[in-house]
Image: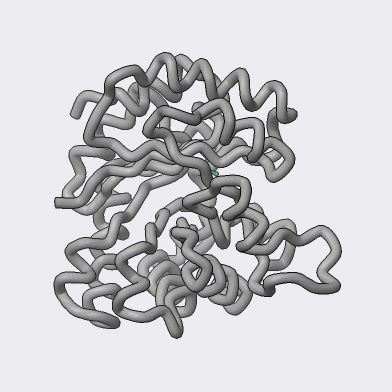
Length: 251
Ligand code: PGA
């Protein structure tokens, strides 16, 4: 049984104070919702404030990126240890905005994911195709290739702590989500890669989120899809009402 996981990616939104307020509102509105793991991923500067705001609730804290070294001359980067100290359990790695705007390669995504795992953080590894790739019919090849490279060197034990997020680039922030059927098909191929790389149990157990214009009115469809176990939510996670409605989805 895979426990669904719904994460809010706040991207470069909210100061510490604003983030704490939003986190408090979310905790209040989620209320007694059980059976769904909820993760909030504010910017680095708001992690401590959000950690304090969610204390005593079941909501978990996640960061949006992590470096692969413990420390050193890496201006602007944040190490796994630094994230752990703020109370992070999760960290997003390889988001398409990092890949597109900051030149992150599959190799870097792999290093980041491995460093997260080695230090006790659970990575949410993002993969997804561009519109051109989808039109060219190379979606499965592109996405499964990204998954294989991201998982290189990750052990059988560690794979249990990995979450994969399938986020087609054309669906992110566009208001045009993939259909649950299309997302499910790609998720099925992703699951197969994990089965091939590890074993059937690993493929069966890995949690795969869908991301890209997830809203309260479409979450139910994604959650019904056999191979999708949650969502990575951008825009709609910045509003307590809509994020709580997503968390409280009815399939
Ligand atoms: P969106 O973003 O929900 O605003 O489309 C999703 C993401 O980038 O993770």
